[in-house]
Image (tube, rainbow, N blue to C red):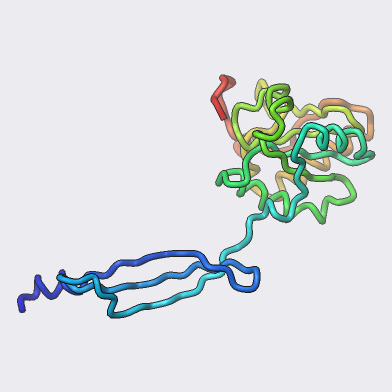
Length: 203
């Protein structure tokens, strides 16, 4: 048997699948070896890797215009944070992780909700949400605008670079709103503010 034949005969293929055990998701890494002439499995290697749950699961969701109208009307003396996006979008998941990890610390100043852009077309059009994620802020029913050093003051587009950037922004919006301001200047380093063309880009 030649070395080349042996090499081909013992080719390895890795398969990754996901299983659920007691409500927790795990990634299964399976190494299978096949013979050259027959696809007979002759060895397995299993490795369980815990998959962190989607952070969006820990944030309350608004599923229709009525729900959004209700929270805008009812959330008082706090900054209302609405994250527009999709649960399966990688950048939205990155932002959701920051939002979920800061929600408790900011609970006295902010209420955070996530909105699927497909479920709220009226607000998606109203705020001209062409990129996701986009985050909009309210205070006592009033839309709060923020000067990020860009032409668009109506929303934050993209994910925050750090948890501290988001915390600092909420504190500035909260303090400004408590003083009656409807627009505040962003405390975030301009280098940490994503840049997007102000052109419609189908979601």
